[in-house]
Image (cartoon, rainbow, N blue to C red; front, side, top):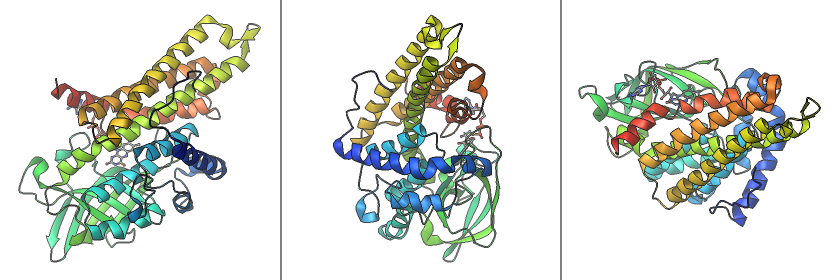
Length: 383
Ligand SMILES: Cc1cc2nc3c(=O)[nH]c(=O)nc-3n(C[C@H](O)[C@H](O)[C@H](O)COP(=O)(O)OP(=O)(O)OC[C@H]3O[C@@H](n4cnc5c(N)ncnc54)[C@H](O)[C@@H]3O)c2cc1C
């Protein structure tokens, strides 16, 4: 969608070639399987190794650890192409796990896990939320008790994206139950799916995003090596999460803008093709005005997002601006997609139309990665 001469300043020839490769891969491999993924509520497991083969996974992790050696611009290209294709595939969550390992892992941990994640042999999930602790992460109850060279994990986790296929899970646990709040929280890597006491619950029946799974996870005396702790010592988990959440929030913002742009593109096309009262919908002033508003808002979102991406790449994106991006861009996405459904009339409510799928898939963007209310709290604290 453009009609404007605007070009993201972070775009380059190298990234254009990368985009072409990813787009072609998605069209040939993921789009034909979308209906099946949506029906079974998860992607096929081979999708991960295929994605790894084309360089879609961990594109912004250094080559020495098996990644693509790019920047957040490469990650953005992947997320944009997935969003524009209407594909639900947890590559963003996978990258988030990769970045926890990259930022806090030892040399040995990075060499052990990152190359296999980049190849898609290991599928990443991040497991913070619990049935009784979502926004208030300090309230998590899952524990990891040190016993010799192991940690023994007990508890349950809710809403884990990629949970079904995940075999490298970054789990937020309480390693010290004597201290209240954030102090006793650590991040532990759980590797493998067949550990005694580890159980994956069902793939939850969601309102949208049917092509990717969201599961519950249960830990009943699950043993993991003590060397799977992320960071040099226990108790650093909460600050590690706070440091990494801007990355996660920016990935959500990238998908939000790409989806909003795509909604305007497909709705403009529809409004030119569909007729009512003997003329195309686009000839009604209301249709043009609504699309003009949507296009303007999507463009404002794009410019703000591009600024955030540039600042992130140069190491200057602060947590407050990342919160602004997450909240404003996802609200904007939902406003635009909802308006575009309206402009489609009854067909906008039919799941065979991409705009209907976008509508159900968009809603959760305002909820996960920290709700938009929590984003406003974070921004509010900076006032
Ligand atoms: C599809 C999906 C995928 C997800 N994937 C993952 C994942 O991979 N890993 C993971 O760990 N989690 C995941 N989540 C969980 C998600 O991050 C949480 O649902 C979210 O953080 C909100 O927590 P909650 O559901 O417990 O809501 P609650 O925290 O109970 O919030 C309920 C309402 O109260 C509001 N509220 C709470 N506190 C405040 C406050 N201080 N001020 C103002 N309002 C407040 C919230 O904004 C919300 O409107 C996923 C969720 C969904 C739906």
